[in-house]
Structures are given as C-alpha cells and as structure tokens.
Image (cartoon, rainbow, N blue to C red; front, side, top):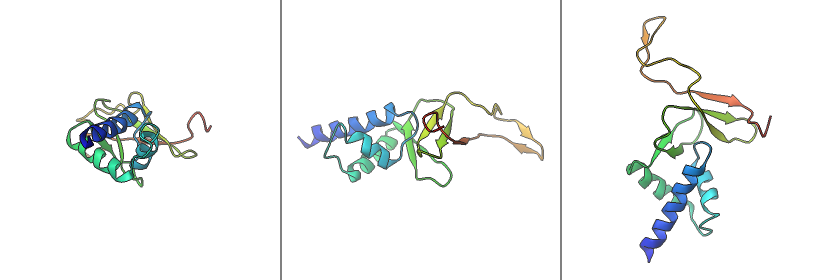
Length: 126
C-alpha cells in the first residue's frame, strides 16, 4: 500500500509542477500539491522533487538571489518574469534577447548560452 500512496503523492507533485505558469519553489509545490493530497509533508515533496530531477522529469531553475525552483523538462529555450508584488515567477514565451550561440560580443566574448529573468509587475498586480 505504501508504494501506491507514494505514486499518488509523486503524481500530484508532478502535476503541480506541470500545471504551473512558471517554475515553482518546493514550498509552492507543497502548497499546490496539498489540494490533492491534504496530509502531504514537505519532506516528501523534497524527496519527490529530487527523484523527479534524477529521472529527468523536472529541471532546476536558478534565479539570482532566490531559492531553487523547478519546472518540467521539454519547455525549450525560454526565460522568466518575476513579479515584485506577488513573488510569482512566470515563463515567457520565446526569447526577447535573440543572441544566438557562437555570437562574438565586443571585447571578444563568445556566447555559449544565456539566461534572462525580467522583474516587474504581472498583469494581476500592475
């Protein structure tokens, strides 16, 4: 019976991550997953997220000065928007930068990758 419960918990956690509009912290995953599994503990969420990363289901998103966040694999190259009012992080469609890999910048810097986080107010908070 323990395995069924673990699978149910894991599925609820993965669904929370997949349904989000952007990457979530473990605390946010915990809150969202508890709507489906009311007794879910934070330690279970940490273990499940670690397992989901190891299995290649979710990826780590690091935002400067923020706790680690997680999103499902397969979203392709994209960037994030962090609302300064509600503290939510959203995925941005497409890439507003348009600097391809291999571009040489002034000073001889060769671009291999880029990550961009924009900060401001989301549509609900604006």
